[in-house]
Length: 117
Image (cartoon, one colour):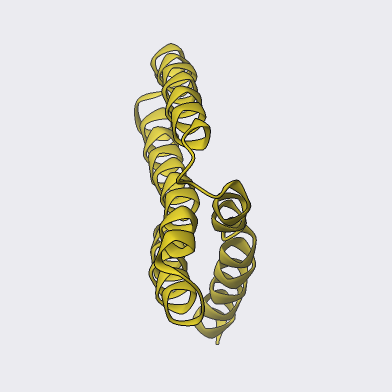
């Protein structure tokens, strides 16, 4: 789980820098909102997953997940309701999860092959 978290953080920072360089700061901030929501969601999900594996507290984990999604939905609704946030760039920021998953899968595959040799 660590690789995927660090890869998502790198994608967030790199994406923000690239959007800032090639586009406006406003669009870069909108991208950062989406990417940071995805990053926070991924880190929180991996923490909950580890709690569930270690302690087997299914009820605690499920209640934390439900509360988290309610808070994230309310915050996202508030942010997208404002005029200064471009929802297209927020969605592109959310999309950083796809290359993160693919890159993390490749890293995990290559590290497993090297450990076998």
